[in-house]
Image (tube, rainbow, N blue to C red):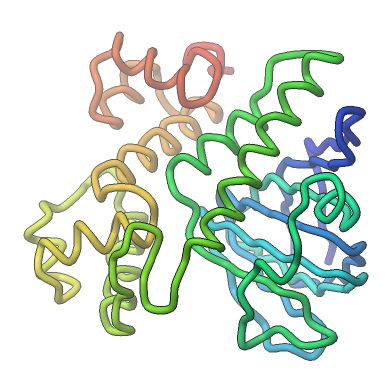
Length: 290
């Protein structure tokens, strides 16, 4: 069993003490890896894939992308990661030392709400679905076309913007209410919404109507549409479009279809598909063909 870390990079900004990394992780078998973290803030945006982790003797927590993990600690801490073999993990990770938070940015730990998991050995941490804006920022980080000093300036700005959004969402949240004042979904509704997402992932090229999908998972259309956006950061059809584009990317990269066939599978005309594809992935679709 082994874990392959490919297409990854890391740098420390000369503008502010911030560390940014990203890339893809593929594992060939179940394996646990212990990571030692310095005191400070750690933010991970998981665009795709699944992993679970545990801190100290705390229970294992499963995270499925697109999701965001935030942890803040005033002392060093360790995390044990277990990677899923099902799909490659694509991520962006940002770290800020405790001195930068306290002295440079004047962010104090007492401003963060307590959690049931927080103890003297376990830092504050939170996992939640990443909204569309956060996902877009992470992709901009991964697809940065600049070099040298401009690259550092660009990535530092995007990383700080992403960190600001994550911290602001933590401080604005109240028990039972999300960022926009929407009440929390019940456990049954959450289960139904995850089931809806699973169905959409299983057949991205054959999307049922909203009414049919709602009946299938036992929700009304209003709860399905509002709950899906609240939980996964996108509308049902927005999510489907993203999955279709990802499918088109894989088909083109492996030579399974022509650009016209990929456009048809994604529900676009050829010209519109090329524009949407380049905006989404940063390159024209014909450049992916072997």
